[in-house]
Length: 355
Ligand SMILES: Nc1ncnc2c1ncn2[C@@H]1O[C@H](COP(=O)(O)OP(=O)(O)O)[C@@H](O)[C@H]1O
Ligand SMILES: [Mg+2]
Image 1 (cartoon, protein in one colour):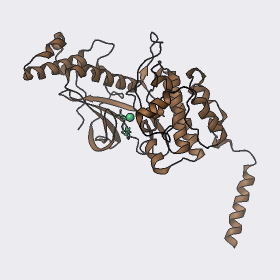
Image 2 (tube, rainbow, N blue to C red; image 1 turned 90 degrees about the vertical axis):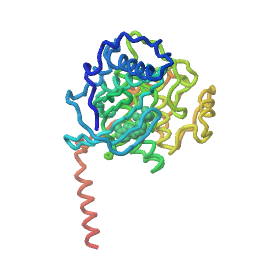
Image 3 (cartoon, rainbow, N blue to C red; image 1 turned 60 degrees about the horizontal axis):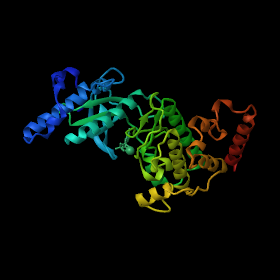
Image 4 (cartoon, rainbow, N blue to C red; image 1 turned 135 degrees about the vertical axis):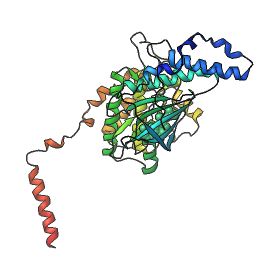
């Protein structure tokens, strides 16, 4: 069952005086105690803007009591389980992170998770997986992030199972993907690991972005480009591979890669090589572009705009959404004369019935 968040008072603040250097102690028992202290210092009294405990208060203000079910996914950093809110019966998902006991990695682990949780907590959009709460285990060796359960699985799975998607399905998925991405970018968040395995599809075709573990928030004081290499090769933008620093436009390249995947049934570059290092080399090669799929012209043009090696030339998510390709057909605005078609179809059905 979910532990509920540790309250700030449950681990004593006096531990703040602990020094990281003392972790070199040769006594293993002593070491364990020191690691525990290090963790409590990080999780409970971290002196940045908000401590982990403050961050992990439930979004709704009311602690969810939950019970863990079966495993539904596993990524690079976490195992994901289905769980049930035992008070309401609602199904949820929980992302379970095992925290390291390696003193040199605790800080990194902590920073990674704090980043993901603090970002998730701020985000509220129909195309972004909804965050509920974070529970730190009393021993501080694991962390459970409770999120919305999206029953359909990942877009990657859907494509593997059903192959190339129909034009209309690509259009509705692409539109929702762009809406989620535009929302992220408006909130100064770069996803940085956008790929079909981090896109969830619910049973009614609603799309949700997930996995903000690699995401980065651009602060006002941080308008410089970030320089880091994370993410998955097939969907990675050239400037990310080449470590030239990247920005929101790197997500637009990855979006183009997901569009290629939906229209061709496989990730870009995968027809050239299945080896990650080879793919990285291809992406890094000047002038090199992945093959564009055979699909309707408007979609092909959009892919070409996203998959440009020069990040400055790529359109923003907001601009892409303005294209007529993404305009939603409003079911309320059926043209006046549409009853004629309806009459005709009734007529045909009647004729068939008479036969
Ligand atoms: N909210 C969710 N609902 C259903 N399945 C999920 C959910 N979140 C993640 N998953 C499954 O778990 C896998 C790993 O989750 P992800 O957040 O991408 O973790 P990681 O950071 O380890 O890559 C996903 O590919 C997906 O199959
Ligand atoms: Mg993932």
